Image (cartoon, rainbow, N blue to C red; front, side, top):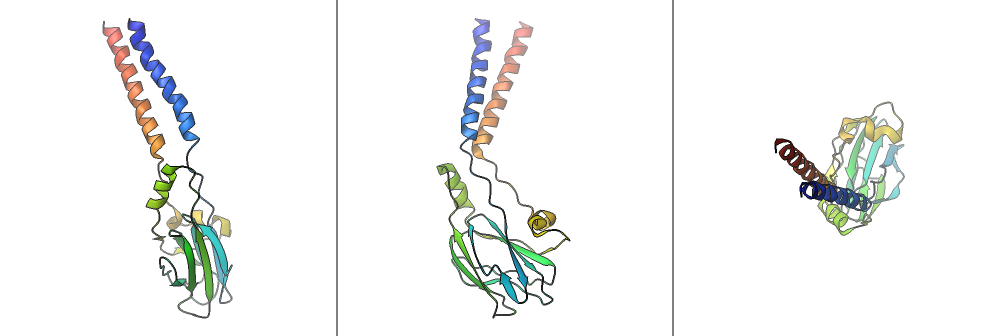
Length: 192
């Protein structure tokens, strides 16, 4: 009888571990790398680009003059910080659509971003994507002497909080509860 009481939680623990392997396979895909737009010679390069919702776009000013990026036509407006040479500003794409923008300091400078919906492998991921649909703005960050591909990780403003997958959270709580039950059973067994 005592073996049955100890075996039941062990079977539950093994079953949950097997279930967590299946659930971990349905986790959303990793975010896409940031898109870097260079501001130089009074132009945005690339002048036109496509990103997915949730992707970070980084504008870096390499001109002697100060510049910014401000929407003129978009599903959700953004107004970028005016950047002196060597500084960057980043924006996380949210609402899908076409974003036309200019430098409000030099209105002859034009750019365009097309934001596509992020692929959602599961219904759960779609819920998380909807929660991130509003654009988030970042303060300008001084550009370190780093390659453009490392710019986002080099600046303190580039750090973002990673979302916790609720499935993994539930599995962790269930495993913790199972371990607790096993410890309680083991302690009762010693005292009896």
